[in-house]
Amino acid sequence: MKRIKLNYLMIFFQLLILISAITLVFPITLQESKIYASETDSLSMSANEITIITPENKTYSNPISDYYPGVYGFENDAPNSNPFGWNTTEAPSTSVNVINEIDNHKRVVHLTDNNAAGYPIINKSIGSRTSGIIEFWIRAGETNRQHYFQISDDANNGIHLYMMQVGNWRYVTTGPVYNIIEAYNANQWYHVKIEFNTTKFHLWIDGVSKDGGAGYDLAGSPTSFKRIAFNTDYGETGANMWIDAIGYSWDSDYNIGDNLNEGLLLSFESNKNLDWMGYSLDGQLNKTILGNTTLPFPSEGSHQIQVFGNVSSGIVYQSEIRKFLIDTTAPTSSILFTLYGDPNIVIKSTAFTIIADDGLGSGISLIRYRINNSGWNDYNSTFDLSNYEDGYYMIYYYSIDNGGNIELENSVLVELIDISSEPSISGYSTPLLIISFCGVIALIIRKKIKN
Figure 1 (cartoon, rainbow, N blue to C red):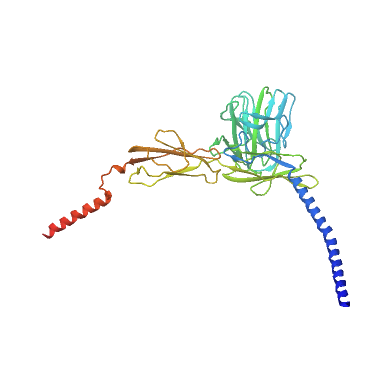
Figure 2: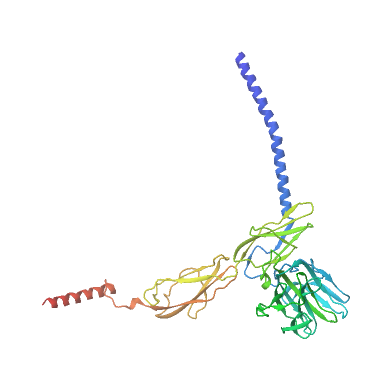
């Protein structure tokens, strides 16, 4: 009896220990769950502070029109504002403003000058450089007004490039001497590339070398270059000039030639006052940006992009990962069939199969074919020429991918013959009869030789 009571007592103490353990563990588990949920909510909220607008989650067969990549492409500047990152001087009756669009370029700087005693200017310090490359797009509104670009030291020695009021491009050498390069047109965009050092500079306009490789002399003898500037000039009224997509070699995130063609606009929104912004394309290291920017058009295939930003308190925000596809190349297709004979001889039952491949692109949307001058047919399965008479037939075919890229038309010429009209003896095929006939002839010849 005592043993039974002892057993019950031991069971009772064991239950007490178990209940205590549950009581202690459960609040801890619950608290951990709450902390985890709180952290998850915080991360989710941070991810929603930046929203990517473009690129969209779709297939791009072409760049986004009118946006050109550059260190300064002005995409993030509001219309009617001064360009961010540049020193701006606006004399009375002059102006410097970012405008929304002109002549197939979006978000560009517009300088206007209606003051004969002053002029508008944008300039920027570039440190102290002895060599480099700079390129930009420029447009003059007139051929009878001065439009001017310079890279110089503090004493104005360096490169002075004019679209002059006499209608031609000129560069200035010591004297000053205004050397003629060639004529220019009003209201036409020009791509300018300048490669410089402290003794010479090389000039390309729209990709064509103007100095022939020999280089042009400078104005004065600079030992380094300190600033770049765009402006009109004294004595001008009614002058207009536009600047877009400025890029240079001393920015590590810009490659010379990036601004030659339209790119892919990265635009986003944030409800936070971000002190720093950057993006990562395809998981690469972050690149710092001022805000909305134009990227060089990516290569063919699938891509993803993400935008990051932080505030002064150190909190880092990020957008969701945006996926998109670049597909600028048309698919390729081919036609497969078994020859009955050469060259390209087929019969009524010959099956024709068309296959198409889009590589890294968006995939095949449609394959079409036609025979001679018939209407186009959507290809869904193999076809033959069983409803056609003997003769020659041209089969045309092409494919279209999901990005809308259309392949150039392919064609193949075949000769259709009707084998049902070949002579035959019931129960024997023509080839077998021919073989048998040849065998008989051989036996006759052999017998005659023996005799």
